[in-house]
Amino acid sequence: MKNLCPNTVIPTKAGIQVETTGFQIKSGMTRLKSDYRYTTIGPYFCTKERFNPMQKTFSFQGAGEIHFGRGAIDQLPDLSARHGSGPILLVMDPFLSRGFLKIQLFSDLKKKGLTPILFDQIEPEPSPASAEAGARLARRKTCSLVIGIGGGSTLDTAKAVAMLALNSGKVSDYVGLDLVPHPGLPTILVPTSAGTGSEVTFTAVFTNRAAKTKGGINSRFLYPTVALLDPELTLSLPPQITAQTGMDALTHAMEAYTSNKANPLSDMAAEKAITLIGRYLKKAVKNGKDLKAREGMLLGSLLAGMALANAGVGAVHAMAYPLGALFNITHGLANAVLLPYVLEFNRVACPERFARMEFLLSGSVAAISAEAGAKKCIQKITNLSRAIGIPKNLKELRIPEKAIRTMAEAAIKVARPIENNPRPITVEDIVRLYHKMY
Image 1 (cartoon, rainbow, N blue to C red):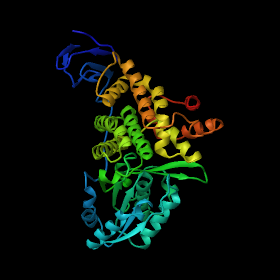
Image 2 (cartoon, rainbow, N blue to C red; image 1 turned 90 degrees about the horizontal axis):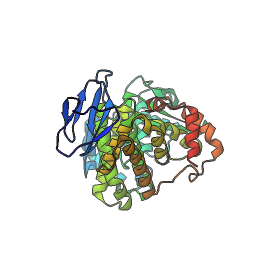
Image 3 (tube, one colour; image 1 turned 135 degrees about the vertical axis):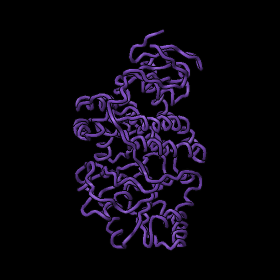
Image 4 (tube, one colour; image 1 turned 120 degrees about the vertical axis):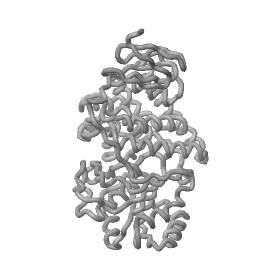
């Protein structure tokens, strides 16, 4: 019998039972005893971490329905007829609204007796004004359903449009947590990028450019009625956007997995997301027509969105907000650049989880301890970022170093991600982290 200390990793052989503290662990198993959880990182190592399943309760929520697969967009007319009637609002990325997809969808929706109305006044990192304009149109046309088709900015706008259509006021009235009093119109969200996971979250984020601030509406009433995911819609995504949105999805999964609010169900989604993104992101960037890679990335993004919606995110997101608000850096790019630096800061808080993520990313274990595995995890993220062309630091984004204090003071106010971060973080910690990125 061998007693383990917390956070240690011991070698085992695949398929061989190892006797530890009076019970057995097989490869791939998780066992609970007293206040500790023993989890195999891979076929050769297991970790011990403090865990008491009775210390907290948890819930798991998401979109009402999820439809996924090649050609799934063909289901949109039937789903629209099920959830709406008469006029329906189609909130669409302006690039897509000028193409064949819009023409085909309008034709198919009309055949179902619906009256599609286009709204495509969408900006990257959308402003509150765009959602408010869409809501006015939805009310004026008495729309019964909102369909969002596009990237994260489009989907966030669609969710807010649907909410504002049946709730008075402006976007700014609802920025925060659980401030929306009533459900909005039903929504069907169709992502055309693999990154934000907005099609399964309860959040819509907007940038107030005049005030140079960024904030999100967070409400259970923003969960979509239907999420419809078709990997064929992502085939035309350019390599640079594929890389940035893919790293955004990976950030969601890794921050949810290490969040203070992580739970067994969010862990399941996050682990599969990390595995899929680790396997397919480079392939999707290298060859955008690789449908299998696109499918894997879209599923990874979906699962990462489910994980973040239920476990939350951490300091990467808090520190990314000021980059968007002050310097118009897109959310995915900001997360991608910040991720390895914040992971390095956080790894001491839960090295076992970082070691597990290293295994999920690579599918093999070369580390001899949780600490070594955690370090390798961060190196893998750094190597992945370099391989797909992510900028190395804030200097390459042309963010002035003199703005660091202002950014740090803004980041520390993004309360929920700061609270969720696995390692306590102060404004001075954030200042030091930003300085490391030059």
